[in-house]
Image (cartoon, rainbow, N blue to C red):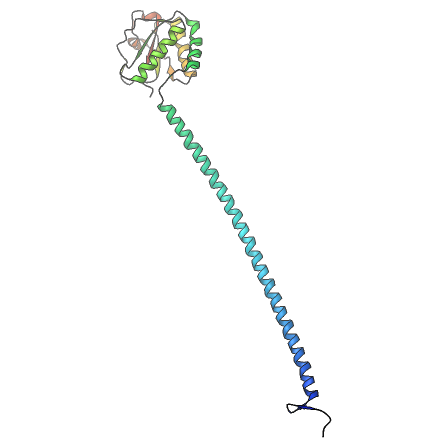
Length: 220
């Protein structure tokens, strides 16, 4: 009888050898599985890192684009508000608040005693009201209002036109130019054209040679 035990038809030594072999194979397989797991983890880590970097880059670019859009929107809103204010200013009737009224009076005082006549479109409230405000300034500055008769303005008269008789280039002309400049400085369009003899027809009143004629046409 053999002195070695038998298991499943083979000696115990046989199974010991194969057992060790199987353990080694298992260890190798386990190592390979671990290596594969580590490699896949590394690959996934790199993929995730690249994806994160790409996401951050896109997020940064999108943030800059949104910031640019916000800037453009803010600029557009500012331009719209500016345009709205300009439109309101354009539509607003001409007037002289107390401060501007006082400034105009001071500019006209050096010509106190100057004869002046004011005409406007009587049926246009904006024109008529501003003409009355100018008359008040003339009185406050010591100018003399001429005969109030004024037959009306020629069709299409716009702004403020300050006229003098072109045959007289003395004091009335200097006063007219000062008036036109003072109004322009107050952002009220006004001109004092150097009229030729034909334009003297636009002068009204009895003392044309010595008076300043102010035509208050429509604002625009």
